[in-house]
Structure formats: structure tokens, C-alpha cells
Amino acid sequence: MNTADPFIRALTGDEAEQTVTLVRSYPAAAADVWNALTTPERIARWYGTIVGTPPRAVGDEFEVEIGQGMVRRAHLESCAAPSGLSYTWWSGDGDPGLVTIRLDAIADDETRLTVQHDRLRPHRMTQYGGGWEQNLVALADVLGATGEADEDGDARVGRWELLGDRPLDVRLAIDAPVERVWRAWSSAEGLASWWWAHWGDVAVAADVRVGGEYRIEAPGQGLAVAGEYLVVEPGRRLAFTWTWTDDEGQSRDEAVEVRFTAADAGTVVSVRHTGPWEDEAPVDAYRQGWGFVLAQLASSVH
Image (cartoon, one colour):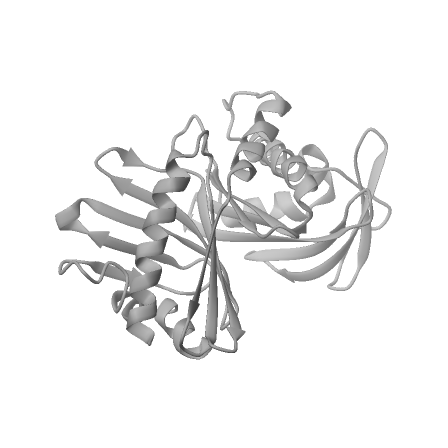
């Protein structure tokens, strides 16, 4: 990752509910990061002050003062030290979001942290995207990762506004049952049967689970796409980060969500692709690309 910008960002979801995902690494052992996430004294330094009794078991409710007298209610949904936790979080207007935090030990002294905030209304997405960035920069200081430049909050929010400005939506009705279409997406073998199938040198690797990675590469064309699975709901939904590589370089902060809906004629596949696009050129290029590969998918499962 670029040290000037330590985050990988992803915006997924649809017009009704959206998900903000942030991924970054810290130069600290997983046990230390877990301690900073769960010890009230350290939580206060990067997130907010626990009001009253802190949560001690799954099912506990608790409150957090997040500044300027704002207190928010939360409910602990899961807790598995030191790999992750989740909690329902009620916003100021009462909307319940779901926050999931996952820790992956990269080395004895390096930990990868993934934060997903689900069930956000679109008008809340930018606020929470920028807020989580600010919190995770503060967490870096708690963990001793000094030297990160402070940044204006408007700049953080502006990045998430850009991510939400030009979503690309592509839909295709396929004459095949959901189970067959899902299988074509949910393994390396399935993807290899249709993705860029017109080229003979395509290599596909896919570990289809939350946190698993995928890579599809066409060496002869100088093209590759890779990323990490964020959501895997069999037969219903996939979401993943997306890094496109060609002779012009690599894309950044792009994400894709794919939904599978049973229909009379088979399956409707809905793709939403987001990225920090300042004009329509990337949208138009991806629209053409998605149309082509989805047509290959339809032919392979028919």
C-alpha cells in the first residue's frame, strides 16, 4: 500500500443500503490491536468513551460518547478474541447499522484490520466513511504508528462522496437457475469456464470466502484483476474489492457487488461497480467490459 494513503476503501450495496469497508495494516501484534479495540481506556483515545458498564458478553448493550455530547447505543453481536467482533450501532436518527471488525495477523508484528459498516442509508455513507478513516488514523497513533499526516475531515468525506457519485449498474437475465449461475462465480473452476474465455492464456485463482482473495490474469493481454471477497452469501450475493491492472497502472478503491435473483426465465444477475471516478470515461469502459463478460457467462451456463 502507498504509505501516503494506508487505506483500501470499498463502497458496496445498492440504492437503499450501502456498506463502507476500510482495510489497513498496523505495525503491531494482533493481541495488541485487539487490546486497543476492547480496552475502555484505549478505546477512548481513538473511538469514544464507554458510558457506564462496558460490554462483557455477547448480547450486552452499551453506550459510547463520541464527542460533542453525542451518545450512541450499541449491541454486541459477536466477539472472538483476537480475530474479530461485531456490534449493532444506532445512528443519531435511529437507524441500526452493523459494524464488523476483522483482524488478520500478517506477521508477529503486523496486523491487517478490516472494518465493514453495513446497512447505511446513502446519505449517511459519506459521514461514516470519513469518520472511520479519522478513527483508524487515531488508532494508528495509539498503536505507536506515528508520522501519519493529519487531514481535513472534508477531504475524507469528499473521497467517499466521489465513490458514491457514479455507480455503474449492469443487469442481465440469464436462462439458467440460480444454483448454476452461482457455481460459475463461486470457484476458480467456475470463473475459468467463462471469464475472458476467448483468450487461451487466462489464469484464475479464487478463494471464495470472506477474507479470501481472487486473481484473474491474461498475461498475453497484459491485463489482470484481483481483490478480496468482502461478502459471500451463497446463491444471493457476492461483494469484493477490485484492482484492475493494465499497461497504464493499477486502479484503486474500486469494488463490485453481484446479486443473484431468481426469475421466471432463470436468473437476473445485477452488478454494481463503484470507484473514485471523476468523469464518465471509466464508467463507460467498465460498462462495455461487464457487458462482454456477462455475455460469456450467459453462454457458458445456458
